[in-house]
Picture (cartoon, rainbow, N blue to C red):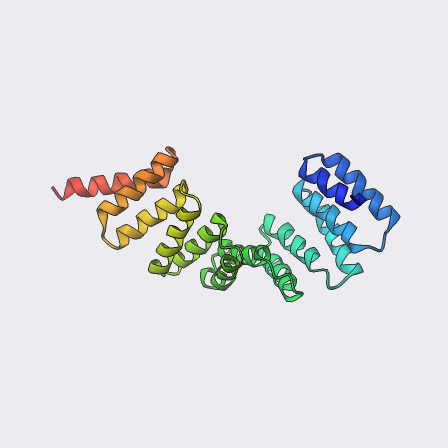
Length: 221
């Protein structure tokens, strides 16, 4: 195991001080290698030390202007601080440099989603869902974007796919309940709200949705 691999292993084990020391030693021994700065940036990002993480990622890009993972790291730094415009540019740069993985597409889509640019989020979340079809969170966020853009039939399909991956997904059931209300299928909506509450008894939205249905049914009697 190389020194840098050992540092990553320490990170996975939660031994952050040991990881920091290994990455520091690696930089001292090979200060021209951008990978060491990127790995230290990843550690600092994990520790929520965003200012220092940004500096290390930027150093990585200075040493290698095509270091896609450095730009991906920068995107995460900016995303965590709600600097969505900077995050978009960084994630897009990582993709343009060939980081053809689900994560940068997913995070770029999430940045648009958090910035309430729902239509712009769709192609990136769709691509992430294609690259990582078995990830419930990726599929769920894609379903949300579809629902936000009123593509309810497709959103319904995706939320059902989420439940195939993760049967106990309260938010997927809640959103299927909301779609059922739009379809005027009250019985199905109640089934989904009940399922969401069974999985997560304190699910406020599902509880409120069920209560509104009960009030509506009482008024119609």
